[in-house]
Structure formats: structure tokens, C-alpha cells
Length: 281
Image 1 (cartoon, rainbow, N blue to C red):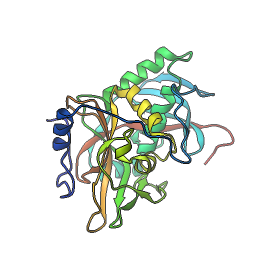
Image 2 (cartoon, rainbow, N blue to C red):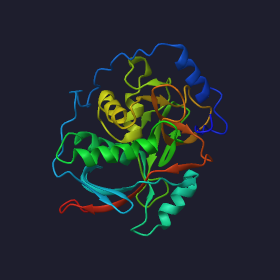
Image 3 (cartoon, rainbow, N blue to C red):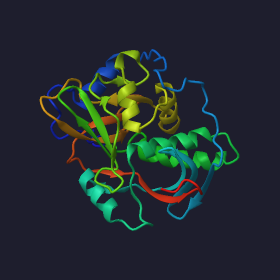
Image 4 (tube, one colour):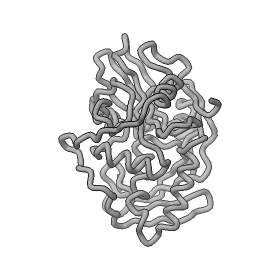
């Protein structure tokens, strides 16, 4: 159990991750499909390739051009090695002081946008290099590795509504739209989990649950599983958004908005490479 880092004091209304894992091992995995919600893109199977995509190896990792992130087409570098383990506060402090050429911790939407872009171009002209990059990300997010901290923070309110703060404590910090974050743990493609609002907020996207699951399953080989507060808190609570599979013998990639703010974890290192003309900002 040494690879999974769980909240220091799990809220009383939540099962610990160990209890969740134990329950999954006792039950057969049945995942009814969730029909696309209003505003979602329908699930169409394989994701279409993108235009203006390019990937190249650099000294520290990879440069990916053509990422659709925050309604802009951008290029980001991501590092082969994770950033040293820190609390989210420490990752945020490092990012705020970092020079332009330094790698900083990614927020959750950028992790998804990067993975999605690679998945969309897995059968293209650069498929061999894309596969190499995928294996690198699997080594960061996949089995046998600790969850990564992100610069996204989940804020739960007493009403059951909440919001995700992206780029936590950065000059670029911004909030999600109000979202229903509280709900049952479960596979995001399972209708009973009711994960649409939650998952959309975590990754700042309107993609369908099937599409999001497809992306992370291509990266890690695991189904995507939501782990969160299960009932309304007595007062406002803040938790780190952490991502990863961990060292458990079940087929789940955890999207976790129940990570302790003092938990020390590595992070996916990213840095802005460039912005295409006409998309500055």
C-alpha cells in the first residue's frame, strides 16, 4: 500500500480509498454507459485527429504542438521525470517563482488536454513518437506510481455545490462554473455515479464521459473512477485534485478531488512552449 497517498483525515462521510478498492475487488465491474448530457459531444468511438499537431523530443521530455487548451491552440513541453514531491502549496509557490524555462506543476485541465491531444493523434504520421510519449505518461499516471498533485483545488460548500480552482495561487488562477461536486464514488461511465457535472468541472471540458474515459484508458489501460466527498460537508472544505492509478490490483484510474492539502506528492512538469499567431494571451 506504499504507493497510494490518501488524505490525512478522510471526511467522516467518505470511505477511505482502501475501503473503495476492497469493495471493487468483491464485485464484478459492470459499467452501464452514460448518455451524453446536454452540451456534451456524443461518443463517436475513436477520437478524430487534430490539425497543426506536432510532437518532438527535447532534452527534458517532449514538446507537443496543437493542444486545444482554454479555447486556444497552444504548445507545451512536458518533462519525462516528475517534479519532486511537495504539497500543493509548495508546488504553487514554486510555480509562482519559476523562470519561464522552468517546469512547473500542471493543473488538471492541462493534463487532460495533453493526454487527449496525444490520443487523437495516436494513428497519425508521428504515431511511433506519440506511443513513446504515451508510455512516458503511463509511467507517471499509471500502475505502481503515486498519485500526482495538480494545481487544481476542489472547493466543497455545505449545499453540495462547489467549484474547482485552476492554477491555484497563480496570476492565472481562475474558477470553474458552479458544479455539483458531491456524489457517489464510481466509474464515470456508470449512470449511477452521476459524474458528468463533477468531471466536467475537474477538467474544464464538455467532453462526454466516454470520451474522457477513452483518453485516460489509452494512457493508463484503466477505467476512470471518480473519488470525492459523498455527502454535503458541514462547512466549506478544500481538497487537492490528484490523479493516478496507484499500486492496487484493480482497473481504475482515479480522478480524486478528496486529496489532503498537506499530502506530499510529485507533479507532472509542464512549461509553455509557444502560442500560435492570433492566439496570444
